[in-house]
Image 1 (cartoon, rainbow over the protein chains, first blue to last red):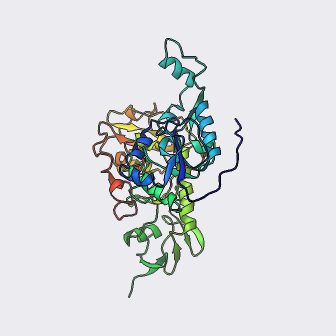
Image 2: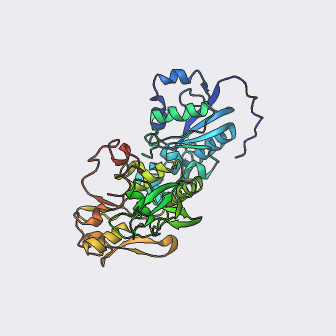
Length: 183
Length: 235
């Protein structure tokens, strides 16, 4: 799907616009993000949320930063990812599923049709509203360019905080020992 | 008479005749990243993570004999970037799902990747099909995590005297095999007390019924980085 873009609004002394989404993930990364607790109050001084489960806004606007949790397991995931890439200046793969497919990708060596008939022995659901499953689960960098990776399952609240404060300050995020984790 | 030395990133490192660069550097408290090298075994030189620049030429630190006056570069931007690329390739060639691996936190591959600042895999995942072998009563084999370091092969051959493991195949088809008619570990004489059972730097050879004995967050590399003395090798 091709997305037509209008130019980004000019930068000014304004809050960064941030969008977040969960694709084939468990929302654990979002929960860990919220675990920054009272630091959310400081964060909200510097950012405003666009599309996100936190706002319940359904479409993504022009954003400075897109945080993507989860990998790609169906056609809707791919569409949402491409919209995020087109609308976000900086895109971050957050968590193991976005980075290497994570738990959902452990179905990749199994036959998808067999899986469906095993899980739904009474008949595989076939509703046009259900997005088409991909044969394999993919990490997001295999479909779009990703600017940064924030690993973890989930990344810790401190890792989120360190990463975001670095980005907001214009620094290249660096997760040292104790903050960089793949589990 | 002073000890002979070579320099490692500009620092003098003393050595005794017969030392490799990696042996001498490690004894002096320096960290040269490595996966397939272990102090209990002869050098193998397969992972190439320990590649350094010796008098301007690339070489595996585990295989090059130390000699007086060598100028060895170890932690340079170029070498660490190449190590990170090698690590990324190791990750995508297997199925390294750290959150569901019992070895996570004790894994040398993971800890080395942390140390090299690997945040993402960069390359396209292979997602190979590698069934596990749960045939042994005490030991699980999960080939998904094998990095072909051959430490289990060497341990089984040189210490246990059993030759339970071998590497077979070529190129991308290279893989770890078990030496029994069925190809199953349960049909070998391997025991949980064998050196080969505890040498795996990643999560291929795991003892059964010990899951989460040490909680996540309290494991080896949760506490210390892999660069710390005493933390540089698989157990």
